[in-house]
Length: 85
Picture (cartoon, one colour):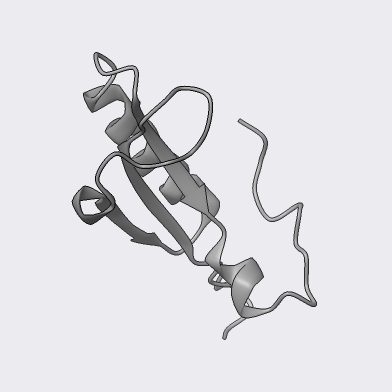
């Protein structure tokens, strides 16, 4: 990686309709919407926001950002890898 390249910190954005607003159990696990995998939190956040806005009329629809890079290297917790939104 060159000095000008930012490190890749993969993030997964996905969502689905929940059975209840009280917990995270999906109504139909096979119908999850896999939005995509993004190289950093900023791009994942933008994708998450777009997906959430498309489904704003369905209160049971929820989207999530998973920090894949933390699963790939649990020894390195980079809590400061993204700006607060």
